[in-house]
Length: 285
Image 1 (spheres, rainbow, N blue to C red):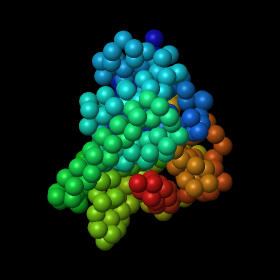
Image 2: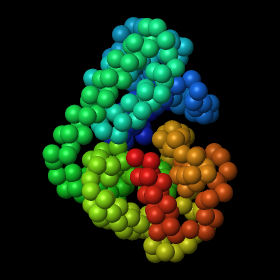
Image 3: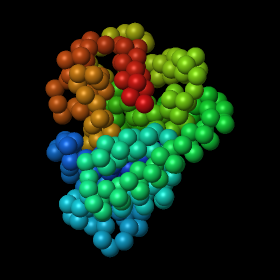
């Protein structure tokens, strides 16, 4: 039997619950087409999340797959159970607003109710954050996350994958809050610090100087390890939002089952990769 995802890759991903909730919100939009190759991963993760969140008997994978009303009800329960952060609430509010306008009857009423809750929580969360020292909390969050990278917590992923994982962890937490809500000059300072520190860690992971160029395969090669495919699938799921045209480096780093995007440099340094990943992830919110 395969090892549970939450005991493998999910064990080190603090952003996984928030990312899962946004994925669940996206699934309510029938005009969006998720990658079918990731369906087995999504089903495994969903089953584990059902067990972890102790859902009622109706929350069976087959029923959730076919009933939007049940997915919506589950999303509402998870919102109360997991207290999502600012980015998750922002994403869910945006998605539900789009989908709600295309519904009728009871499902529209139910969706409107969840949308209202999301917006109210988002307003309270942003008001709370603006009363705090977001920049200091961002520095602390960055230090802790980069330490986790440096100490080997993300070692099961490729060198570039480790960088991507660290940035995703930051994007969904206090660092990302500060990047979205702080003053412009503070955002510049945070971004420059992150570039410098992440470049050093990525370069060290392949015993290179920050601007030493290597063929892209050196950065994307995943080390052999137990549960290798689970780690690769988790990375693909996290980066499924990326588009080859607008986010070529994120796409190439996460979707390694595809050909690398045209915009991915074939010869690249740690500095070049980090610059691109930071811009691609933090320009997305």
